[in-house]
Image (tube, rainbow, N blue to C red; front, side):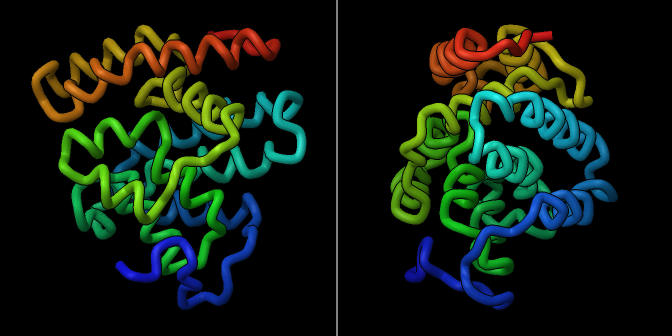
Length: 200
């Protein structure tokens, strides 16, 4: 795709969209075909709401990213089968979502490492560069990786173990989880050290 992050989308120019838009879009794409994924998404968004005091002005962006981080799992959007890339492209191309939001979705929870396992690292890097704000990146990792598939708070260690058990250690996702585990745990620790949130 030659347009990359500057694509304006059929719904107009790239601009910040409200949280209500993100919630409605995620529900539309996930609640019917993937109710468990929607439960996880709701839980991740609830976790994001707890970090408002830490992120200030960027808290709204975090909540929107939390609501949309797994939208690429929607069956009709699964072009590559790599949900961060499929989701970010959909948000950019169909909805003209802003650059920071699409980049957060594309790179959430160290997706670049999984992209490498899938031979998609260069594609992801070219279309959706990493977000520079480490606090925002860490916050989305914390929200995602301390929430079970059913939307219940958990620890990052338990979440990584659950992923390995569900997908298998030698699967693409399993290999990614093993590689990313130290980074995930470090990001979660940074968030919990900087804020009053608790892992459970």
